[in-house]
Image 1 (tube, helix red, strand yellow):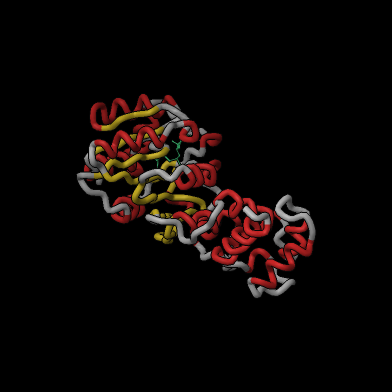
Image 2: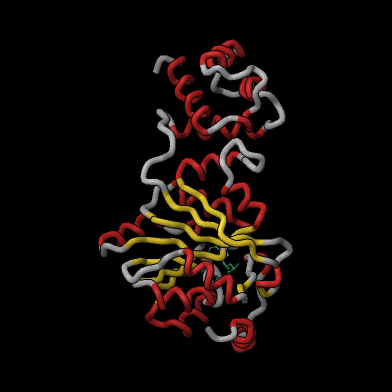
Length: 286
Ligand code: SAM
């Protein structure tokens, strides 16, 4: 690998690029971290890698060496011009907002070619959560997601539901995937330096969700309501929710599941939330 710092600076100079903060442009300039991302993604020739936010193409350059196919989705058309020059026929470029791309269709096309689809990205941090949720909730046929994100977000996405750093999103990630923390990355590994510490994480998608639930939407609505008022007891948080007509109904469910009436939502496992969701449906006689 050439000296990445020099290469990045020279590309930026050649094309007159100034990193756009609003687009979360912090270019990766640390060789060790690039290697870690590429190695942890375990890319093979039969794989199609979808890279989100390729920027100047630092990761892309390594991805094309390993993958059978690389598709880059980048919002900034200036970056697209650079990528066209650097990789011409080697990569498929999509100049669009990742949140608006029809990933289902794109991935189905890859599946027809018998490719295993993997996501690799140094994500734009301002939209980490919507991107991760899109990748998971759309039930795409992806094998793994290897991404650089902000460290605090990494902690929330990768902990076990019920642990200290849990948020509502922890339950969603755990439902769909097995999460692994890979490497903490200091600010100095980027140009320009972001204000936060970063971390590489990996999500391996589960073949089946971790719990069986009759109504997935209800499960996540329930978790969301519980976490919106996380300091309250679960009973109080849910009492104003549309799921119950009165407190007695919640009490009955908590008793049935042998949960203390003072328990807070953040103390519950995903299995317990799933049981509550299933009990709500039973109470309604559906
Ligand atoms: N992959 C490059 C690297 O590691 O040096 C750049 C990573 S930079 C943190 C994030 C990239 O995402 C930028 O190139 C930015 O233009 C792009 N980006 C920002 N918002 C986007 C969006 N909504 N859809 C697609 N790409 C986006």
